[in-house]
Amino acid sequence: MKPAKLQTICNDHSLDNTLRRIAEKVMEGTRITPEEGLYLYEHGPLGFVGALANYMREQRHGDNTYFNRNFHIEPTNVCIYDCKFCSYSRRIKKREDGWELSMDQIMEQVKQYDGQPITEVHIVGGVLPQYDLEFYTELFRRIKAHRPDLHIKALTPVEYHYIFKKAKVSYEQGMQMMKEAGLDSIPGGGAEIFDSEIRKKICADKCTAAQWLQIHEIWHRMGGRSNATMLYGHIEAYHHRIDHMERLRQLQDRTGGFQTFIPLKFRNKDNQMAHIPEVSVIEDLRNYAISRIYLDNFPHIKAYWPMIGRQVAQLSLAFGVDDIDGTIDDTTKIYSMAGAEEQHPAMSTEELVQLIRRVGRRPLERDTLYHIIKDYTDYQFDSDKEIRGYISLPVIGKN
Ligand code: V47
Ligand code: SF4
Image (tube, rainbow, N blue to C red; front, side):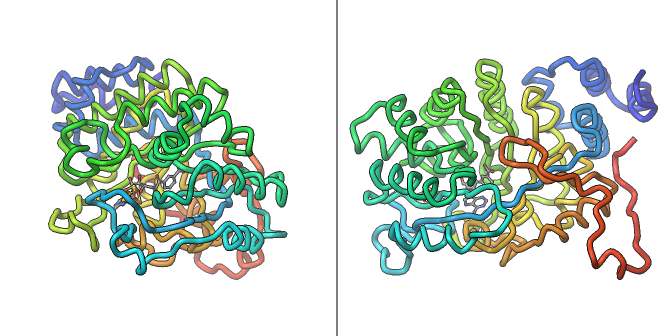
């Protein structure tokens, strides 16, 4: 049985045949083609793509909305590369303006979370010669020795490609060494936009799309899990977004190793692309929705709330998103330096839970691999008793 709202959409004769065919496919669980994906970007109204994406989201997860408790470590913001969108890196020529943490300083940061119920550390930063194979394998060993249960989600193919080349080891050998040292999963960064012409213009000198995909594939074949991102809303066209997602969809068909897709909205503060205007919130929501529809083999779509802000994160939950990450403090500088909504991205577990509840969804704390740690649906916080006139907002696009 089709939900009434989608049935209405299929019978809506103000929609053209292609859109109605796409709606039929989504309801049958049939994959849409790249041409249809492009058609959605070019002609799909927000309400239409939102309803389809919400249908897919609820088929997979119902109202479940996942978050985790993590902290970020950024060993350095100095980088040998020169990505034009990056507001974060202090280029190697202006090294004195940046930070370069020693192993001991990083371990001090890890120890600050001793005794706190955190399940993941996310480690990513600039690329510099001293952060090499020896440094990171030793760091992972020290973190695991100190706190064996902490999941290490660390580094992207941008770092791995550089580190392995410098150490003269193959990708396979390098990833195996990282795994033995304690690496648990790979975050989604460094993907940007896979198209080589766009890459040449925005991040010419770092790893190629093929190298990014190859490292994830090797990791998946070793039994590892990873995420994938897409930096959108700058100089790319819609067909570049479809090409990006198509390459991910094909890799996922081969390995099944991706967990989450994270669209990252280009922010234009203090970088070499500052002249490019940022896209609208409507475009953000359309992009979440079309990602959900296109990437039918990705279990999760994540909205990274420090970047888009809490209200858009709430809205995104009705446009295909089922995960809102979960940084609990302001240990990441990548977005605040790029002009993100949240200058000091700190949200307590209670605030995250309330944010999810207020749009009628079910807050579930997860670990990195999406095992449920705690269901907060009926959990009573002390402050719940103090909330007066609690408003339950209607969920847009919900059947
Ligand atoms: O690859 C850099 C992006 C990424 C800007 O896997 C920018 O759970 C927008 O990948 N505007 C790194 N984006 C962050 C990342 C990430 C974040 C949260 C969770 C996960 C995960 C991964 O940040 C980079 C780049 O695409 N970025 N500068 C900017 N001006
Ligand atoms: Fe370096 Fe990453 Fe910034 Fe590119 S996005 S300059 S690789 S820190």
